[in-house]
Length: 134
Ligand code: SF4
Image (cartoon, rainbow, N blue to C red; front, top):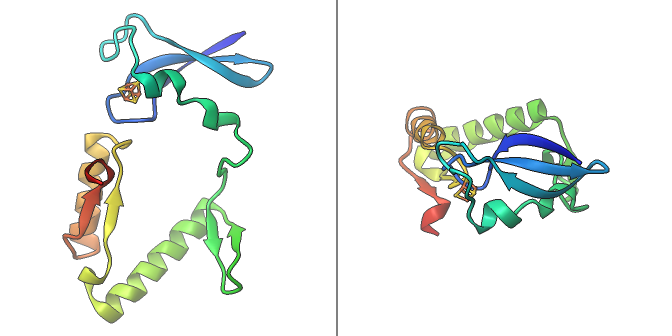
């Protein structure tokens, strides 16, 4: 069995654990004992939330919905350019308050701060919320 040290991606706390890998498949996690945040402990999401890694329905690429109604695989560059162009078009026609942003509890405080900056400075709206409030 191979063990790979990583940071839990389920919230912004930043607990550390080793991902336990056997035959190229994630089979469990082991908390890092001397980590200053988690100190050898994890919440239930950290312990049990790894099943998505090998799930066949896991999204592995950005998808863009085309005019025929079907989602098609795209590169990150294509997806980001498509999103920027679409948002720019909506804002130029209807103003900044015609769009909104949902950020995530899985982001760090710093990433959520950047989302607020992007929303207010670039998109020109205060329409921003966070999934922890939903
Ligand atoms: S183990 Fe729990 S508390 Fe720690 S980062 Fe993951 S989700 Fe957050």
